[in-house]
Image (cartoon, rainbow over the protein chains, first blue to last red):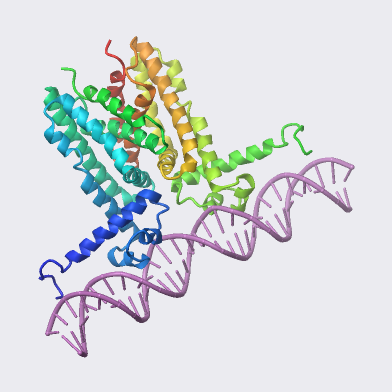
Length: 205
Length: 205
DNA sequence: GAAAAGTCTTGACGGTTGTCAAGGAACAGG
DNA sequence: CCTGTTCCTTGACAACCGTCAAGACTTTTC
């Protein structure tokens, strides 16, 4: 009773609840951003009351970091399907670009939350460890695309993983902001930009 | 007396005071970020009291936007000297990369404030107009570098201004975050990254 | 079915925030 | 010197914040 030996609900329920709470929190965090999303507002948009947060999380910051970690864990394999099913270099670029556009359309609030948090980590040191860690997994995700793209094209990548990630992230961020500002055609632009950029990331050989 | 006809202090003093207040505000904004910089804290780190803000600015938001606009106005010509004095393509790249590194070293707080504000504009619609406008001037600034670089190299730019800006901004942001996290060598990496990237921005001709 | 453990709600606390009104200080013109 | 204008400080306001303790409700255990 004190420890855990039951079927599957000794402390798993605890984790399950944390996940559910984090899922609710992610919705309002994506809507309001890190600074303006209060624990009360987060709780209001969920099935819980505002006090329950401190039962499952020690801190507001622990909740936030848990939330973003959880989101990143689900989205870090977004392009795996594209990578695995691609048979030609051009086909991979096509699928990759389409997926980039699709995720801006479908999950813009989550992406702006990520950029919000990363910016905030430039001020708040306690966020940096989680941010750097997540950034690394995103870089790896991108590199999986780039390296198999290079393989399919029979060429070698011309840049380090972090550089490739930095370049694509810049374009992605620009497109996200444009999309949120209601600029028409910004997603199509992103698509063509990616098509132009990808060949440049490989050695000319 | 009602209108302005005196030497230079009818309403100029007003603007002068606004500028001074904004300068003070920029310091604490760069230190704490948009969300955590309260008007009281801003006033504490200045020669004024906290109530004076509403004498010169209608809103906290008006102050912030005024501040960032003022900063952007001074820094948008950062690379003009490099551009004007460059005689070779390689020399221009050298000076440009050095200047990028230098500004991260010297003005990291201002840069993170800018990225903070741009992220915030993804949530707060009232910030978007100013952010998009500043973004455009930065794009123009970068394009002045790229186009004279292309001229000196006797080649044509291979990408639209917004794309070139997006790519470089991605690298810059990455380097800024790394620098703030205390990562050694991240600025040297940025320098070499820029040296690698610049030729790619031009058509192979 | 009683007791114990776990789960969640409610309400309150100290503190901070943006905003603004009231009034003093500095300065102008007469 | 008086008076009106401009400039700035002080203090207060209502609202909101994160946090936590007290207790009610639910579930599990014996």
